[in-house]
Image 1 (cartoon, one colour):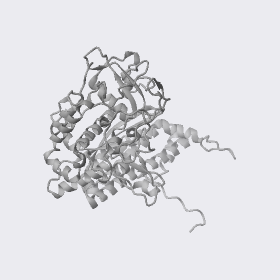
Image 2 (cartoon, one colour):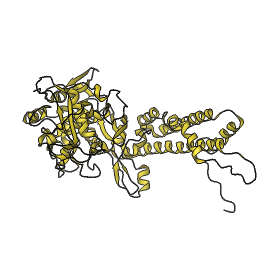
Image 3 (cartoon, one colour):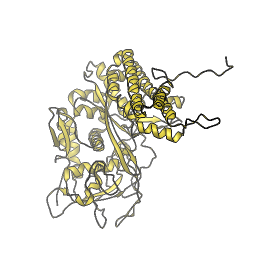
Image 4 (tube, helix red, strand yellow):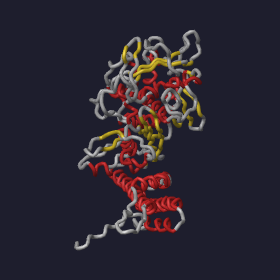
Length: 527
């Protein structure tokens, strides 16, 4: 029977500070964290899963020692590694991927008549109903998977599996629940990144909201639950929720650590409708002022949702009077840590980075995933200065949205002139068909032409917050150029005949030259 200890065998891909890419064991990542730059994997979901796991491992070992004061002390000295080593020594038998009694994150007695391909664990691979977006192999092509890759896929499968599909019947449990989405997959995950992986793990080792909040147990400290039998066990149980009943299949007669198949089905439904309490989620407000997780939207860059990523009031609070935006807990606690370091004269010289990871899905299929990084200017982390910086960012994003609204108004006016009947007969209907207008505007793809120019300038805006007025002036100029370019692109596609040229002129007159809406004309007889 093969063995594969996640504590001792290399399986976590990382990048050293000198750029070298290597795989390390779980223990070695902690031991060498000060010399590592980051976790280095292609899949954003696997990146998020590994980061969550590494933080939970530290939390499980250090427990009540995770306080703001200790984090500030560990920033210089590192966390107490002997305590981490002792914890993993205590639970070492629970970290073997192929252990017969307690395989890591798996149900040891679970099976079906026939196993599925290992590719079913990895969202980026083509298997079953998965779209062939990232990989073009089919189930019959799937070779055995080495244990290191299977461990990463297993973790990603547990934390980011999607709902959709009826529950199968297994010999051990009978009818399983229908497939449900894992709680970590319900929104955008936010991490704060430092100069080293050690700093990054400390930044995301966010203290609980109150000491009364139970820590609970991570999944490896518990017997793997039967379907429908698991309950939330504090913060650590929440972050290692067993969404699927899984078992990896290997060749019991071989010592080669490879996975040849899998058994998987729904385990226990997440017991709440929203992952409330997840410290790594960004939140937006509903019109009723209720927080819901930010989601990735196709065709929309995550920086456009800076109100949720940074905790800005923005339009959400305007729609829900009196509602307060929620800054991601991990970012709020990073601000507290920065303040402690600053007061001690040890403020970091390099700015931190906000890493946002998420996916857009449709009917159990991943449409796209995102891994975006934004600088976190020091000003954002400091009391009143932070509030002022957030207001500048909010203003910048709202300006961009308003200019785009004006651009859309102009292009719709252009399209309407092109497609309307144009009859001058008395009583004839010369109104444009709205469907034809929408189809023409969609074909011009002004969204990509406009928003595609703003990513780098927005990062420059964040870097220039110390001179807010200058930064906003430059930003406004960028918006106007982007709108001009997008309208010019649509105009070029409209054609060169006299009607098209007239339509281009009339469309542009729908808004001002600086891409602001023209004031409405007062009605006759009004004062």
